[in-house]
Each structure stands twice: as structure tokens, then as C-alpha cells.
Image (cartoon, rainbow, N blue to C red; front, top):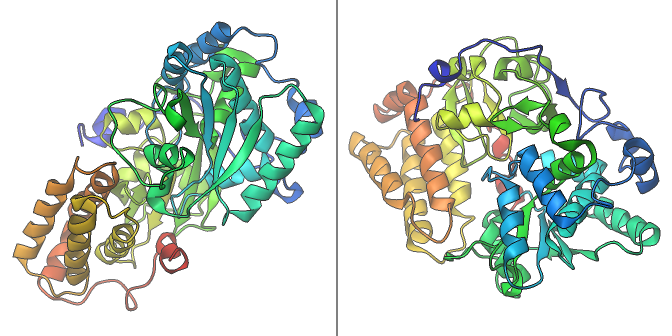
Amino acid sequence: MTAPLLDAVGTTRARRPAFGVAGDAVARLLSGPDARSGPESYESHLARLGPPGHHGRRPDELRALVRDSGVLGRGGGEFPIARKLDLAATTLGTPVVVVNASEGEPASRKDAVLVGLRPHLVLDGAEAVASAVGADEILVYVHRERTAMCRSLERALLERRISDLDAVPARLVDGPDRYVAGEASAVVRFLSGGPAAPRRSALTPAASGVRNRPTVLSNAETYAHVALAARFGAQWFAEAGSPGCPGSTLVTLAGDVAVPGTVVEVVGPTTFSDALEACGGLVRPPQAVLVGGYEGSWLGGSVAWSAPLDRHALGHSGVRLGCGLVAVLAEERCGIAETARIVRWLAGETAGQCGPCALGLPAIASLLGALADGRARRSDVREIHRLAASVRGRGACGHPTGVSEVVESALDTFSEELHRHVRGRACHASGAGLPLPLAAAEGSRR
């Protein structure tokens, strides 16, 4: 970490915390009909929010509005989308807009819930971006296995074709259901006719993306935020979130919570404890919390409990909220064993085209498995550290670095448990390797 989490943010709350789930009035992205109503129709969407905000605006006005709103990407990279718009609009060639709705993070459900309930908000944002950069095509990249999401989008696209004949043509594209297939360069490569495998490039997709055209690529939640900013303006948009990350944030609560997979919209300043108490059913700090996804960071429960649930504040401390996953590890679980399961799964989800992934990750997974089983020595722990450092920043994408980060954070957070495993003592966790719910997808995604 670059700064101690509690020292960086303190525990003072600026105003009353605000949460929302589908149907709650406090929510922004998820406001409207509750989840039992299914996907919102185009007619209901327009009646509730009014006409899309990009109608009647010049492209440069739209780009300025997005820039002033400060919309950051919600897919993990947290990159200002306005920069993508500016580059795509000024690069030679006709741009294309890509909505990445693949949500390859196994435990995350935020994009699936958003697209499943509010597909027109996402598509409004994509059309606003298309208008801002002069794109003539919108591609929505999905995994066909996400049937509910695909049905919602198919219905929404049909409704829009009937109601708005002048809209930018949009279509779904099915991508392979693999972890790295949702990485930006892998998406661009697949949409260009190649394999869904990452590749390094000196140019960003906004300069040269799908079929070498300028490409604005971001995830579903990001486009939904653009739609709201275009409708209600930069000042309204900044009333939620924080100065460092304006707008609300969708978070998936997973692991040992009351209802794993609950998607919460964080609208106001708050802490992990507020969210986990109000929406996760917790009454005290857990053993640990995995923040940001399978390639995120483990935080000790007492540290996470008082930490801000805010992208900017967490990033200042070296922790990325990433895809918005907050996974709880209860006291009776073994953090070393659960990390070994996650890393074993990640090692099997590579594209197999680079040495760090093809060789380094399986070696790390094997050593972690031995550590979890009580068969490792202190020299093996040193080797895990060495291998994690050796794969960091290497390969064609961020996959090795992500694995390195979750491994290093686990060895630090579960240091006491690590020493017990090295000494060959029985794990303190009850049962024989109780599975963490967030790792349950391990077998189902093979």
C-alpha cells in the first residue's frame, strides 16, 4: 500500500450514508421498478427519466459535459472516460463504441443486475458516447451464458429499433466465457476477428481499436453513468460519490454475508461497516475482506471495517475497488486455503500465450496449494514471494500482476495463519476446507 488506510481517510463521515438496491428511491442507476418487475421497458424508462440527454447537443458539448462530470470507468481501470472520447473524436477514421457487458469476474453481479433491470440506461449512455465521437456502430460484448442479461438486451434493442429509427445501429456480440476474454485488448482483438486473448499495443483502443478504428470501450456501469450525466448535468452528477470519484458506485457483496450476490448502490460517503451492517447482515468485523475481485486485495477485517467505501480514497491507499466486489471471509474460514483456491482457478483461466501466465501462475498455485495443505516449508513461502514479484508487470495483460497482488496481500493479511500452516499445524478453520461462496464458481466455469 502507498499509505496506511486508516491514516489516509480517518473515520469521519461527511453526511449520512446512503445505500440503494433495485427499486429504492435513494438509488440512481437502480431506481425505478424493483427486481421482481424484470427489465424495464423503453416506454417506462422514458416516462420515468425523460428523453435522452444527448438529443439536440453538439458532439463537442457532449464531450465537455462528460469531462465536467468527471465520470471514471467502473470496470476496474477507473480511467476518465472523457479522455477516451476526446482521443476517439480527434483520431482519423469513423469511431465505434463498445459496451463491455461480459462481467468476467465470477463473483461480481453488478453489471448483470444493471443490464438485467435497466438495459435502456446502459444503451442511452452508449448512444450518447456515439453522438459525442461520431460513431456509426455500437457493439455490446456479452457472454451468451449470461442468458438473463442477453435476453434483457435483446428485448431492449428490439424496442429501440421500433421506437427510434434514427438511433445508431447496435448489436450484441457473443464472446467466449473466459476470465481474460473480458480484458480490453482481448475484446478488441475478438471483435476484429481474432481470438479473445490479450495483446500488448503501443496504441490505446481509442486511437486504434476494433478493425483499427478509433474505439471507445468501457463497461456497462460506466455507460449508465454517462447517460445520467447527459440527462441531468455535471453538477447533479457530482452530488453523489466523492470529489475524487463523482457519481454513485455499484458494489456486489459476496462471501459470508446474509445474501451472497447482493448488489448495492453506494450513493453517499460511507464505510465498509455501514454497507456490511445494513446490507450484509454483519454486526462485527469479519476476519478479512477481499476488495476488488479475485485479483484484488485482502484487507484485515478491523482495517476494512472503518475504511471508506470509496474508489478514490481506497486508491490513495493502494487498494482498488475494481469491479466493485466486496467479499467477506468469516472467522471460521481459512484465508490461505481460500486464496489457494482462487489462485488455482486464476491459473487455469489464462490465455496461455505468455510465460508469466503459462509457467509462473501454475507454479504459484502449486506452492499455495501445498501451503494450504500444510506441506510447505519456509523456503516455499520465500519462493511464492519471489514468483509473485517475478510475474508482476509482465505478459500481454494485467492478469499476472493481479494474481501477484492478491497473493501478496493474502500472505500479509493472513500472516499468523501462514505460520501455522508452515509448521504443519492443523488449520484453525472448522471443517475440512470449507468453500468460500465467492470461489464456488471454480467448477462451474470449466
